[in-house]
Amino acid sequence: MGTDADEGRREWARHWQYPELPGLDLLRAHYVRHTFPRHAHDGYVIAAVTGGIEEIGLPGHVLRAGPGSVVLINPEVAHTARAGVPEGWAYATLYPSRELIAEVAAEIGTLRGTPGFTTDMVTDPQASRTITEVHRAAESGNALAADTMLRAVVARMLTRHAGPLPARTVRGTGGTDAEAARAVLEDRMADPPSLERLADELGTSPFALLRAFRDRYGMPPHTWLTDARVRRARRLLDAGTPPAEAAVTVGFTDQPHLNRHFTRIVGVPPGAYRRERAGQGASDG
Image 1 (cartoon, one colour):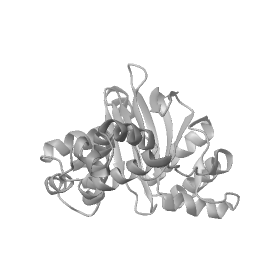
Image 2: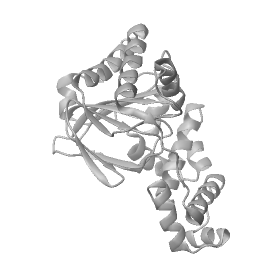
Image 3: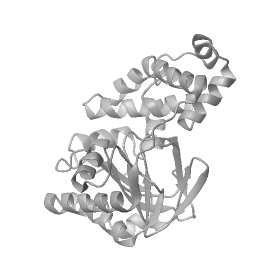
Image 4: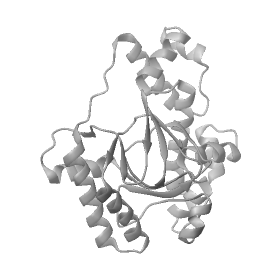
């Protein structure tokens, strides 16, 4: 990873999994020029900003998170991220799966249904430090400490800042059309129809479908498709698929095309991501 002095002067990132913490992805990084385009996650985001300022674009508003802040994002919530100051931002992020969150929520016993965060940012230096310590314990191979602190900080966030996850409402025909369009795009990811053809297949107009899809998923269909392709490519890389093969499978023209979008959305190149999954050690970039 480099020394702390090195980390303060350049961009670096490590996106990985610790085998002793199933259902969790870890990202610790310092970004200066990197910007995350609009995207969403299958699971949750619990991020502790440790330096600089991160600007997070959420539906209807923008957050500015600094040291001591914890950013909380529910599954499938579209968002962007970029530096809010010239020196960028550093953070330690936990990406717990829905299953992990449900497990901790069940242990707490006070939440009913699927839990969801009720706020998107809190000032909680203690939780921020704990999140960072989860990373450091995992990096040093201390499974007992990492698991203990992970469950403690997730329980703290759920107890203080969570309730039932709001159900996705489908408003009339528009919502139904948006969900149908998503299903078509998922099924035909490698060779998707044009917006006009997709709308024609669903018996609506391109503009109406575009508006309904954006209302439903927080981004237009082409942006959603790029994000979905990267998500599917991640699953293929997790299974050991070479990046070039994964690129073509999900509908990118070639590996450089995958590299560009994967790096923007995930925060590390697919090669570094796959090496971490294969247990070949950390990789900056």
